[in-house]
Length: 312
Image (cartoon, rainbow, N blue to C red; front, side, top):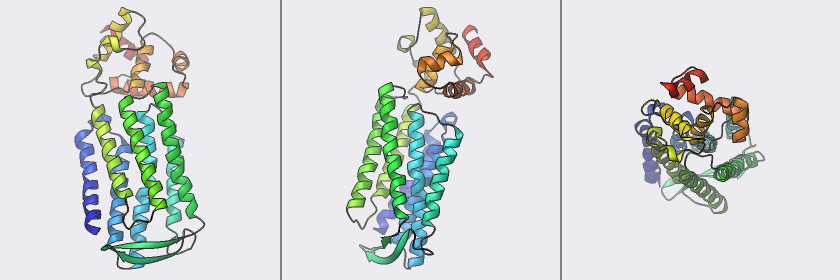
C-alpha cells in the first residue's frame, strides 16, 4: 500500500503543474490552486503515515493529512460556487477559512489531550502502518464540518441548474457527479473499515476533474465566437450589433462567465445597477461585483468607458 500512496502523491504533484499549463493566465483561480495544494498535502500525510514506525511520527503524519482535508471541502465549495455564478463577500471567505483552522486546531490536540482522540495505536497492515483510533468528544465536530459542505454543495449546484445561471450546464452536472462521488466514498469509509484510505484516490480524481472543467472553460465563452442569435437579452438588431461590437473588444484569451455576459447585455441597454439587480433577481452588491470583473476584463475604468466600446 505504501507504493500505492507514493503513486497517488506523485500524481497529486502534477496537479499544480497542470494548473499553470492548462489554465490561462487571466483565468487563474486562487481557490483552484489551493485545492490542488490541499490534495497534495492530504496525500503526503497518507504516505508518511504508511511509512510510520512510531506513534509520534504517525500522529504528525495524520496532522499533515488533516491539514489538507479541512481545506479540500472548503476549496471545492468556493470553486463550485463561482462556477455556478455565486459570489460571496470577503468576510464569508474569512469565516470559512477560520472554521477550517479551528477544525485543524482540534486535530493538533492529538498526542497531548484526549479531546479529539482518546487513544491511538499504531499497527502494520498490508505492508503499511495504520492508526487505530478511539475518538474523543471533539471528533463529532469534524463530521458536522464535512457534512455541512456535502449538504451545501449540492444545494448550490441545484439552485444553479434551476436558474440556469452557471457557465455551462453540462459541466455543472459533472461537478454534481464529483460531489456525489465524494459523499459516497466518505460514507462508505465511515461504515466500512478499510486498511487503505480510498479518499486519497477520491480527492485526486475530484481535483483532476476540476482541472478538466477549467480547461474546458477556456474556450467555452470566447465571446468573439458566439453569434448574436445566442444572446438571451436582445431587444432589437441594433442592440445585438452594439453588443457584438463590444464583445469583439474583449482582449484575446479573456473569457466571460455566463453571468458576466448577461450583466453586460443589460448594461449596454442602459439599465442602472438597481435595475440590473431587479432583472436578474440578485443584490446590487452582486451586480457591483460582476461590473468590477467586466471593467477588469475589458481593461476600462468604469461604465462610461465600457459603453464607449460600442461606438468605436
